[in-house]
Amino acid sequence: MLPTLHIGDFILVNKYDYGIRLPVLNTKVLEVGAPQKGRSLVAFRYPMDESVDFIKRVVATPGDRVEYRDKVLYVNGVEQAQSRPRDFVDDSTMVTLEERTENLSGLEHSIAVDHRRPSWVPMQAVMKKESTCSYNDRGFVCTVPEGKYFAMGDNRDNSEDSRFWVLCRMKTWSARLSASGRTSATWAASAAFTNA
Image 1 (tube, rainbow, N blue to C red):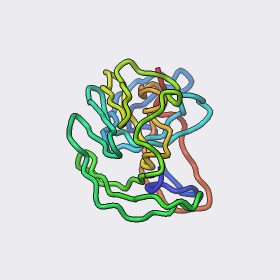
Image 2: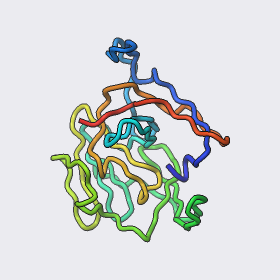
Image 3: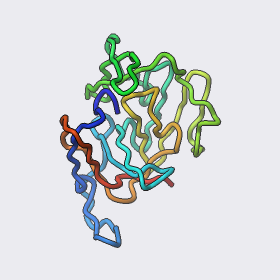
């Protein structure tokens, strides 16, 4: 999630923002809300290995058409504006990326773009295919079906996200990031979304 979150950041999550569930049964008893595109950073179990927690930004909600083409995100045909690029050095790899400010549905946040990598996703890298998604040599296009969400990392070209492992379905514990800051340890909540 660079440049938004860094290794070692301390985060707080709210597991009750998207509903209250009965312990053990994991049955939702009270619907409270749903993730909003651009506004929701969510913690969830990685669909390919549910023992791993992931954090991503919800970029599209049910019914949206999302496209990532030539390093630019489009939602429902509208280009999500980006600022001029500035240098950003990834502390863990010492690689210089382009940092841009993206306006996603009215909310500004930082993203990182890596011009060493293509915008398109190689088909052999797609772990689970979604029938509503198509891939081409400039990127991908996907229509989000009812009950699912499309999540992407802010480090766009170095992020394993919904482009690779299908869309997310809110099924188990939901967690929305409430705050973050620098510390020597990282803590994340359990699942917010699962695949299927």
